[in-house]
Length: 356
Image (tube, rainbow, N blue to C red; front, top):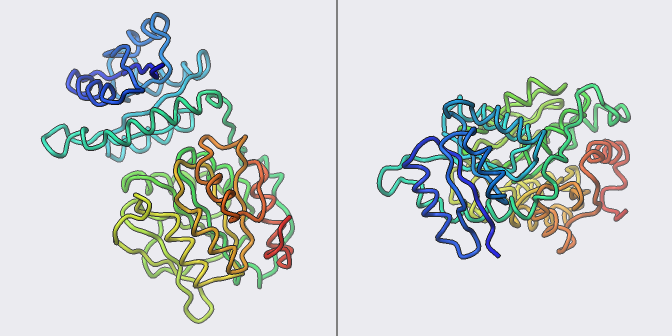
């Protein structure tokens, strides 16, 4: 039976393009296309779709207000169709906080630059959204003052010599936020790769910085990685770590995508395995595909303690599953225990190479 999709977009052109792309897949079926949320509300009742695609700026009611009401009254999988603008990226991040499954950028509809080239991504994200339907509405971000993971006071040596590395994809914006919001100020430097387009990573870093005790920023090439700071790979480049004289630095590389991604989690983890070794810890969170699994294995082989998010709390149990299946994870933990596990490991370095 095909996955039933309802399109919500005020543009007749976009509704037509999305309908054509989605109907190209044998396992997907467009059951309706609504020009605004009020019409969508009635179509949901009549058509009982499995997944929605949702635009943001529409007449009568914007997509965010509609999504907020939907997630409270009738939670279901939603893939946002977002514009690559500053306003669009901020709004999309808000949509993910409200419970949207994922988003895909809305490109120009002109010629070769149109949405058609994104058809594979659209098909994949709709399928994954449907597969994760039982988890819709169950996300919870740890509040900033709910800091059960404050943990032990770490020594200056640990702060300077250790490094925390995090990789995530689908569902990762909320997962990373949960982990970072419960981090105390005194932690080693953190480097992160989250699969996101270029315009979104800057907004995401600023959002995290406003919520967390630690400082969060988009990584810049050549800057030193400092304790109490987290550095997010920009959407246009791979992030690597280099060791110069015992100090760690960010390095950006505009090379070909790895595992279809730039930035790639594997690129980050590979560099950390080579440049930092057992002084690093590696964390792989919710995400589609396998990016990061091989890199996490290299980290473990280099003596690092590694952790995968467990299946029950992942929005998509893809990347952590791939890592677990090849033996890359020393430990596995639910999302709300990840920070506590990291801090416990940092306070007990001898656990790094051990399996729990």
